[in-house]
Image 1 (cartoon, helix red, strand yellow):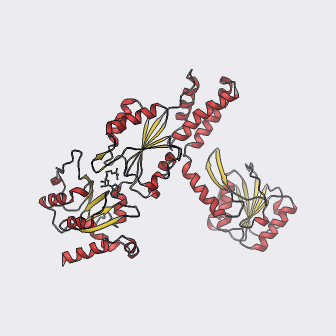
Image 2 (cartoon, protein in one colour; image 1 turned 90 degrees about the vertical axis):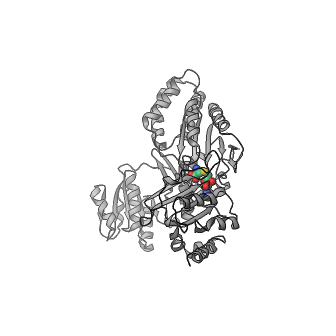
Image 3 (cartoon, rainbow, N blue to C red; image 1 turned 45 degrees about the horizontal axis):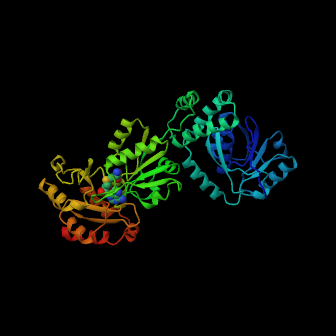
Length: 480
Ligand code: SAH
């Protein structure tokens, strides 16, 4: 079978849906969304389908299907789950030349309905010719994630400028170039929040500039999350696939980097364990230079850019240079690692606050004002503390944290090689020394850590690299 994709206008057209269940409901909703009037034929109606009758554009025939119901119909859909009835609808419709669709039976169909992604007036339709609708739906989800929410607004605004642009730029080739430049840039850089006015201003500016409008560079400061690529935001994914150049930290996982557009230039600018690959000032200068060349620059940072990511300094540098930028949040290590170790950071019975601390500090010392943190009902999350674990534990105990306060160290959180070590302030430094977990690692301290033993599922425990079970028995031994 060969299917030719077309879009048909159903505004105010009468369509017949035979069937009264969940599938008929879905089909009726889709038809209504495109302006059709729907006659539903079924002895009984799904509750939500019955509710649609109030809409005024749905009528119900509570009897068996008959051929005269197809009179003046633009199309018919059979969704009864009864193959005899479905076949009858198909044969009758075909005899009367009314295009028909029988759900899940391409052999009885004149047309099939694709999976669609809508950014009105943009519509993307995906079909497997009925062979594997699940694949079509998967593709639809990918596309859904890729297309900015504001795409429809942009398309409408562009449409409203067509005549003016045609008058102003006579040559069809120059006109196409103009639209490619203006819209290409807008599609690549738009997020979800742009309004019609924003787009209008942008096109006006491009039209009025006497020189050919320059595509303007921009920097997105994007959170890559703690490692698992599935934890990226939709926006981060979309931007990664459109980037011209990506400046990334060492913390960004290989799985996330694989999602960068293959043609994009990748520049590692990371620093690990004191070995600086590029000074912060040089990173700032490089971002400014690349964006000034009109490039779409992604500054990709581990976790969330605004949490211990020095993103603030980068934003200042971009603002000073007049380069437009946007920050895209990411999942911070605390959120990812807490899930790995089954530690609810603010369980209401054990914690009323949760504090994120830099265990390293810019200067490389550990002179942190620990006394500011009380012990009762407080969860501490210490970033960059792996190499100072013993002194952190010591400092906390000096400030009154009991030595049996539960503490966990999660290394390589959310990644396949993650390691969870659980113990107490007293014994965790020793366990860590013995097991030698590899950075990056995060320390969580407080009563909520005890919930780990209750909440870690046996399945997770089985999947965990050796360490967590041993650490648990160390804890039991300590208490005994
Ligand atoms: N902006 C990042 C933090 C950067 S500071 C965020 O929001 O997560 C770097 C520190 O983050 C590391 O020293 C470590 O403490 C922590 N970290 C980052 N990724 C981690 C991971 N996958 N597992 C454990 N800790 C991690």
